[in-house]
Amino acid sequence: MNILDKIVVDKRKETDLRKSLIPVSQLENSVLFARETVSLGKALRNSSTGIIAEHKRRSPSKSEINQGLNVQDVARGYENAGVCGMSVLTDGKYFGGSLDDLLLARASVRLPLLRKEFIIDEYQIIEARAHGADVILLIAAILSKEEIKTFSELAKSLDLDVLLEVHNEAELQKSIMPSLDMLGVNNRNLKTFEVSLDTSKSLSKLIPDEFVKVSESGISSIEAIKNLKPYGYQGFLIGENFMKTDNPGENAKEFIKQLS
Ligand SMILES: O=P(O)(O)OC[C@@H](O)[C@@H](O)c1c[nH]c2ccccc12
Image 1: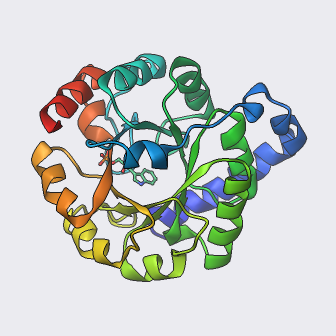
Image 2: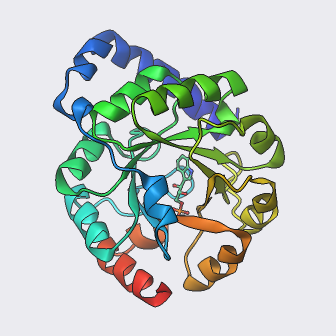
Image 3: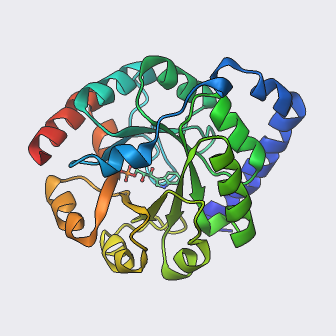
């Protein structure tokens, strides 16, 4: 079994357990469920830099990125740096994140927040809303076309933006539908961890113009972004490059200053 399959097996077990403990009605009654969301898609369209900065403590491809920071400080640092949005990993087992991280980020900033998660059940979308997310990620590699449709339509009905992530042409072809806001190309193959920015370059022409294009993973230089912009990318999702430093916010600030 590849790592992605393993993650999905664990995620199903975890989600079933959560569902048995916290009913949807309880999530729907939370204070955050009624909050007005902010659109990441709009923020990216109106930005000349388009940085989405991620909170990531570790990952299956890098066991230790940074375990010593407070998510609140990271969130405030990113906001102060002028990022368009923040991505918060909520998977515990493989990425060391939690829904509490999302909650604390929400309490700290007004930025659009993305719940970075392996979504395989509608319940996780309700959870995302109830913990302060503005955007959900859907990963084409682990979902059927029908699931992408049901999940993205549910998200839209909850006023959440949808970022759909692909890694190859087949995933892209099966996924294109009106209920998506942003199309993300993951430069990292989630099954092998290989990273190449050429993935973003080659898939860009197949993405219709109505979707905001986002390039994800392996971006660590201004140069990389300057190279991707001519391919129509308006969003750039950066994790490790900021998180590996002692002060991700300051790092992002310097990065954005150099970009603009
Ligand atoms: O740390 P990087 O290489 O800058 O990558 C960030 C982000 O793109 C990556 O964490 C990611 C992209 N898609 C995902 C899906 C699940 C978990 C993580 C991810």
